[in-house]
Image (cartoon, helix red, strand yellow):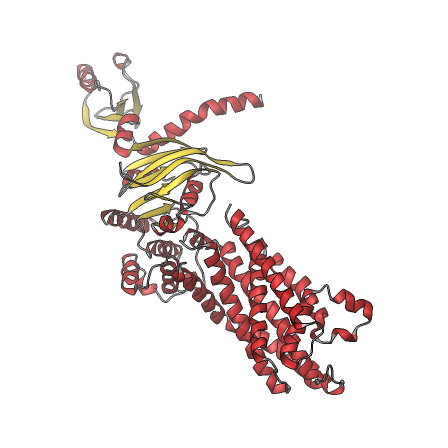
Length: 253
Length: 320
């Protein structure tokens, strides 16, 4: 294991994020705060409680997840896509680092940043709404697991994409809709029975439900199912990535 | 022979079906400067890319200092530095950050003194805090070299190092390559500038359409394949080559003021003495004479051209 190599990739990626802090840190925090203001403080006060918590507090876990998914994917996909696009990937490929170390460097940096952003948004939310965290360890665990899983997913997209449009299309067309329809703003028990069943095919439901459980102790699905589904998706991503490096797909002709 | 790189029967067929390498075998000696010559698309970059780990070979083996470059890729790659053909830089990084990244990637501990020395030698030290995107093209090229040297490689690959580079930088680069060789670094450069190979290389390989058609010591190559020319500068112009000199391969140049005699460099008898006697007997006054050896470029063009011709003929035949 070349720790030096992992460290070099990780630090370079973190430096890139700091360099673009306005776009990569300020922007997600501001846009998530807008949701808090509109849905939490303004509209939320006129809505009834959901699962025993005020609406403003109820949407916090979902909004953080929404942000976490998007940021993890965009950071990791951009991180590996740019060297492919500019050609600087030659250096990574010619270096004595293993595929595993490359993934740890890129995905680790992307996940780190997402987790930090998640915590930052959580702190910011405090300005607008009161909330409690019943299971802080689980909360951090979920944050971490989701950040890693979706950074891996982002890495795959960054390898697959052969243009900037493809880089954006999956987060925009698939992940955001799934997150919105996955119970960010409502409990799925509010839906008619048919749509409740449909919703269970949406993987994001399990993430949001589990994360919300760590805050308020109430969930749409059992916490074990949430963790299990996330781990399944994580494993899938790892399998795809190992296939990518085994075949050299779009990285190594 | 102590070879630092041993390429054995390397083949590469890309997914498109294009066969870039057709069984290339090559030994690079430790400490030499080896120039890989070939027209565009001949397979030079593919060969380098496979040795450096950027491209998977279809078949064959590469040993770097005895280490298989796929099985023992860490040991193999640690020894290699690569300067790519394209100016591919992390545009937003500073020079210093990018050089440090390179060293770290290759698993070497931080060594700021060494990096400073490398940057100074490449006249980059003053620019170390500038973003790469703000540098000129020549400076960007130097940054790529600094990155490749940051982990103290034993073998340096320079893929078309002087393409689109001005004369001063080219001279600088040649000097740098010689300094590196003095320190024991083996250098492999690809180029289609023949003068570069002629100036720098100890040995030359010529690659064409995925095949290594020749590897040879530069001097013996130039001797073997080269021709020499003797140019006689005349006092008075000649209207035509005198009939008495018809048996010599002569051409008349410079509006009749120069008589050029071409002969085989390795022939036992050059024929110069007889020619000069005949010229003297004819009463032609010679003002000056000089002899020259054909350049590597002539040899190269001759080599590639002569092997191309049969194929061109068949293509034409097919078209007709």
